[in-house]
Image 1 (tube, helix red, strand yellow):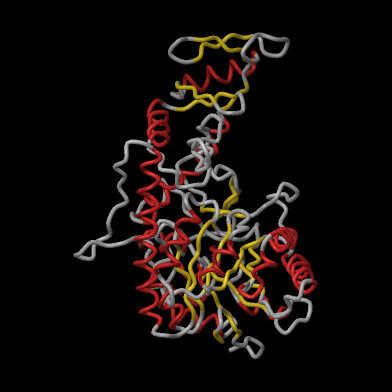
Image 2: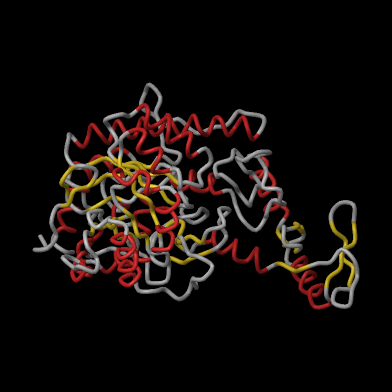
Amino acid sequence: MLKSLKEIKISGKEVLPLIEGGKGISVTKGLSSGAWAAAGGVGTVSCVNPDFYDADGNIVPHLYKGKTRVARHEELIDFAVKGSLTQIREAYERASGEGRIHINILWEMGGAQRVLHEVLEKTRGLVHGVTCGAGMPYKLGEIAAKYGVHYYPIVSSGRAFNALWRRAYKKFAEWLGGVVYEDPWKAGGHNGLSNSEHPLQPEDPYPRVVALRKQMNAVGLQHVPIIMAGGVWHIRDFEYWLDNEEIGLISFQFGTRPLLTKESPISEAWKKRLMTLEPGDVRLHNHSPTGFYSSAIHNPFLQELDERVERQVLFSEEANDVRDVAFSLGARKRDVFLTDADRSLVEGWIDNGFTENMVTPDHSLIFVTPDKKAEIHKDQADCMGCLSQCKFSNWSDKEGNSTGRKADPRSFCIQKTLMDVSHSDDIENNLVFSGHGAYRFAQDPFYSNGFVPTVKELVDRIMTGD
């Protein structure tokens, strides 16, 4: 055990300063989260599309019967609540009174506030804290305080926390259990990169966390820990952060390492792939229907999206000095106008089988195969509103249930692919989120000869500094 790595008070109890990062769509479940808490840390159950079971213990598929998006959205919320209750109760039982149990929810998840209210109402005494990111969760403090649980906003800068504090959190300061700083360049899943930050120019987290601490101290939050997330592998890499006045109280969140444990519910194919990753295999991409950048293993699924965007040309409704070459659009053969160079590109794509064009919200055309176009249209039609707003389907859970923009065929149905990857062996044709440090599985001697630890063995290893 590192000399300086001490227990810390989280959600009202002294626990190990190790937090399991929440991973949605049935990846952070009661089995693994309960084991993490039982090992003395903080287990985190994801309330984003978690599994629930039938009378025989089989996973109930999330099949939508509603004829409209609004009807399917109600089914989605019902599934989320049922699954959350199932996984929280399992985690609590497995923890056996040790550690803490938190839940994780995405603020930009469709129906997030409704799900959070209902879950907290029905799990009083079982949940000790709520972690929330993916957006600006201004209502988080108010909701958590209503049910007497601590809350942990996820931010990627001191500026973001300052905005949350001034607008809302200062009214509910007593329930602020900690602030999660998530490195937007290294964390897996959706990242909080702002328009002023370059996705390919990562910044050192230390000065950013110091800046966050200064802002927190300025409003009397010296006693509130910062939770470092994203890029955390060995605690010894952060030893100079411990007992450091510039950093203050600190804890660490692990999202990627818990994927490779015996209790982790992901497929064996996914676990084996993690063991073979090399530096650069995990990449930031901006295809997500959320509008956020996200980090995932580069595979044929992401490669197809890259190529889909590359087969793109701008068009004009009328001929002008720049675009004066006619191109027939759609079944009605309506003419739009391209540059001569772009027309040559289009002819080449069509010759290679990408015969179908689709209009984007940015006044451009992409070119895909007939099968891909049919798949995109079906996925858009099957939308169940899993996000508060979605650029792929134009869903919005605000008034009118539409963003008012055209659906964007350059993106994808995130619900469909994340549900598929968490319940199948197909890690090539689905989105596979991962932190950028996942290549360290292949380099870390702890995992030699394909060793997969239990959660307890992993927590014990982390506490040594490795």
